Length: 313
Image (cartoon, rainbow, N blue to C red):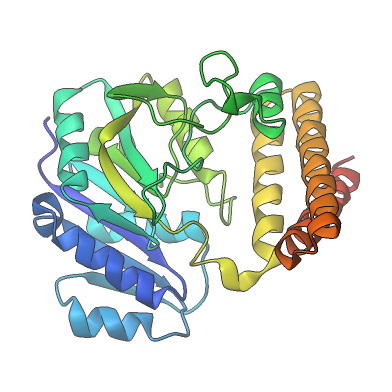
């Protein structure tokens, strides 16, 4: 079946300003205007829900009394939408540019072998972001990523994330949940994201599941979204980085041998230690508070990672 009925799920937590911009961008796209849009608000304290009710009456709003996390809230939104030929999972800190949503939908129509598609994520200055899936984690891709080899060449040194914007349409091994459009037939009517993950790595696992079922995952370069990375989660401070690390370690334990998981954990730890040293040296040499702050963040993250190592044996 060609995707015609589009559903859009947006999970929000205290992102009122960005959520409003996100929704406006959705309704500026013809496919977005025709879509069923559901916002799941994770107990925001910034009047996000009131803004949606006041300014976007067509949106289906689900107000949770607690912060469910990303995976569980996405599944709740998916259930609220009901049947759809395609569903776009979209971060509230992403804003579609032009007809990005229409182009993603057109890609699914043109490629019946594709289970999901994503587009180019750019920052506010139009620069391509290294926040988009390329290869699933492995000792090789983790080493290339954490020791910057992937920046030399995505082809020779493939990393976990894309370091350059591919031209045309490219097949990838996983898609970020920031902007993931999934064919309805690939959803199977069951919860799409594994709710063991509060946030992060659930998109990797969902992508892995799609690939195991024989679906291809595509990146299209002719569609763009401005993505304000971590803007909606920045208020949580170091906790968000700890959550990210915990989710990655959970993904490793679930899907890799103990030797592979051990290797990737220590490659990650070494990579963060390298960044810690670099920011510490730059902070001392240049007297810049920004580098000192990044060094402190890397130190907290590394301590959390090593603590998780001890807990995991």
